[in-house]
View 1 (tube, rainbow, N blue to C red):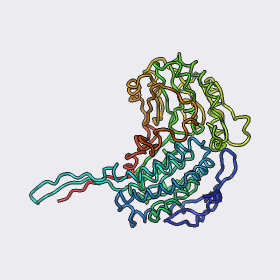
View 2: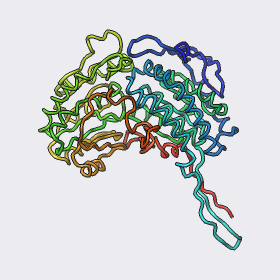
View 3: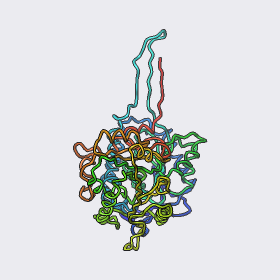
View 4: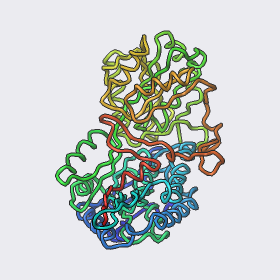
Length: 512
């Protein structure tokens, strides 16, 4: 893979690289330098229809959905191995495309993502209960029995966002393929390049034609994918407003939906946490990928007496939160994806000031960076939960701190949101933390029992112990557990065997 290969004039449809007939071109910009690094066709409804028909033919006539899970897993293992061979080139591409830092590429964006693809290929045969057969029984007409089988849902439209594109392309496409579905993948127009690497890997792994199709474009393609009668299921990650529109568009044909939407996750620090730990917490975990993560805990709930200690530690953490070029190994916070995203963050920060929250630090563009869509890590305190900065998804490096008096009040504040994607509990007692986590209305809650805080991600040296599926005892990213939200944070679940089962239909077969 070379940088020349980041310019595409063809799309991957029906197993071939085909002329797009697109009227325009979408330039891809490196958000750290503002340079154009690649381009893709700006497709339209006809583009989408061609890909949908190819996927429909591959599902209805091709061998893929009728292969055994083992056969599909073997093919997907080849696919993952090809991606693994290209790890370094993929990392270079994704850092340029997304502005992601090196450590985040090692943990999630590249290394952890390839681990997921490999795990699905190796495990799909065993982790899903494909057939449940009852014991045969006798009757007046002889023996009879009953079976429940899982079958692929059909043609899947996968629509992915800009923040973790390679990760989400894999998390959606590979489980769907493992289940026996065929896929039309539409990446975000700002981050389309890595999706073409999936197409190359699929072709080299000899996946049957039409099983995976990759097309690029804007809203017109999205509209076609979510309304076309030949599409059986839509899997989407993005904002809640867009998720609502997809749900409405899919309603006339009653498509299956898997929607992973917005979040405004709260982390509750309980009153048994030592002040020294509160001081050491810092804000790094809230600022990952410049705050462009739907499950990041962007509200911190503190007992009133801990506020000063937290603010002191947050100020200290700025010393190692370098904002800058993500290719530099000591950079902790890279750029926002585009200028319009930075303007959006600035508007939210101004709303926080206007509504009476106290800006502790940040809230501006770094003066030393004249290129790139950078924004300083920003902390608000003395906020109320009815402020926009506490209720709406900002998608930038902004943390809002609220205080509480009782545990019950903290839980109430955490749940006072239209969202329910993530959350956290910090405590000195695991059992207490688990009990509080059970009361948080969110799909993913992390309980941290206090211990030494990690203030420098570079010290983790790549994926870190227990993160890689290669290591003894390592579980890999996204292999255990599930990911998805309550309330207006979405419908359905991703990761692990649950993520594969989302792309199946249950069929009951009685025989006599």
